Image (tube, rainbow, N blue to C red):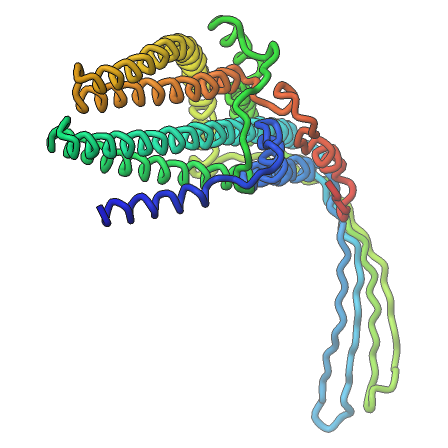
Length: 460
């Protein structure tokens, strides 16, 4: 009994450390808000949108002027045999200008590809947000479930303690047997093991919660008001997903990216017309011994020319690029079909899981009520000699199983409801009623589009 007492004392100490101090309840909405504002994966996805937006400026720069300045300064000297040293110094300064005037619309295709790629990254951000919010939901209800299981199994330990004490008392009075005591002890040890398992699961759930939300759970609340956000049928869920699911929107944007890439690869076969110009001034100094000035000269020159370039042969590179782009375009369309099938499956699966969980809750509630009466009746019958200790222990085990099934079904119902929201593309701050601004890089993108500002401060 000393070893068993040590096991129980250790389990109870861990359990007490897991119980949150009395504090204001933390609703699911507040947990979702905290995760949305502080989760590093969401922040990383937002930064990726901004980084991707820079491809627009890079693409636009291909048709805009490139202007630069250059300068040189240097000299030379000669020492004729028997004559004075002759030194020449000179400097030049110039302005260079170049601009592509026409490239068979390749730049326009590159710009479209960059914009589509930025749109794709925006939908990727929304998909990351959905995944993180759903992970918060899973962790939130896992903590509630495991907390309830810890409490339930703690109650079971107390029940088995009472039954062991009762069996020992009856043995002393000659009304019981050693078998009754042994059976009660076995269930007591098993109850402690189950209790420790529940504590381990709760610790894992709390760690997941802290990972996504940013702090330890505090007095979590089971209920959540979905309002009218949940789809009312499978067809409604699929229709919502087609319009809103970020994975499907990203797949369509990926098709645009591939189409623009194919256009750019095709345009590379065409001519390119460029304007190149420069203005340069030079100053020359000539001197003899001791660098005394002997004469100066200055010139101002300029040039301007149109350059036409037509590719004739590139070792097969242009053709390979075009074939690759065409294949990638077909691949993007196939990927979009696969994405739709995946989302459709998720809608149907989450809807079915939700309906099944509702039925399981009703069944489990009835089973709990019945099993509770069975335990009470079996104890009374045992006390008058009509039932054995084993009958009581078995009745309690059935009662505990029914209660655990009810806890699991309630958790499954809530998680499945949010899974249905996610599958239909509606797991977002605005639909959930979170009073926070939605992450957006639209302001940054608008600033990036103004590529004339070579040096600019972007505050967003």
